[in-house]
Length: 399
Image 1 (tube, rainbow, N blue to C red):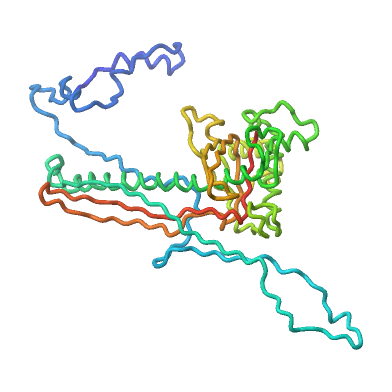
Image 2 (tube, helix red, strand yellow; image 1 turned 180 degrees about the horizontal axis):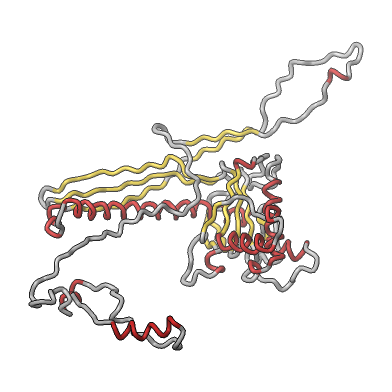
């Protein structure tokens, strides 16, 4: 073991802590252990005893990095089924209202009650697409036993491997869920505007440019406010919170405005899934609640948060974390692809039935290789990720 005398370091630290000396340059290179590779460990002789310099130090504690990752994606997991493949979704529009003849009776008039009035505008959709992937791992337990001192250590090592496999699957599922949401965001934006190359002067019924609305509707609004700076503007955050709560109220009523398919839909509060960019949610929470006496009037609705929609980039900038840049099937013909790029996405509100993950299945199959004396495990995953463009979905962004 390498042992360093640090009395001089401690003596130099004390005046700084007591306030009798300015902060000085400190050499911490011999104080903090930062870990070494096995080769470096042997090369500097720190693996040997401090008595005769020949005895190898034994490992006193083995610690496995096996923290469980619970994931970050929104909870959109739905039902599963064991048999059959297709998810069939049946819908119809409301029937027309007609005159009540019983309150306009005329002597001698015949009233025909034998007219057949069948349901109109019945719509049937079939969802029959799924995705699958697997993670492969080989286990040769007998070959690694000699590296541990007890069954508990060996089990800890094997548990760490299993944990990393499950962690990777959780990360993959998170990313697939976010892509399902991003696909709907892109479809909503694409179908809301004829040209998406510059949305700074545009806003719509389903894709709401909060910054544009703020500049149009708020008296004395700062016309120079940019997407990068708007999250630091108290006036803008108040307006944004007001608009999001307003649209959350609006989709409770029946309307055709808030879905791509122009179907008659309503989304009660308990069926609304509200998802916000964390940077926006925290800015609104801190700025609004700290500046407002009646904070319940400005508090955003209960929502799940994401730190980014697609990725962080290399700097975790607002431009990157609030951006999507994807290719999707054109909702109009479902055959050609369209490209959508948009930064400044702050929030989405969507119906529980608008998107989700169903028929999720995980299983493990194994095969023993007698020649090599190892076991191959195949961690297989299958799920269906779907968007229903005939359900309510609203996007809030700044541009």
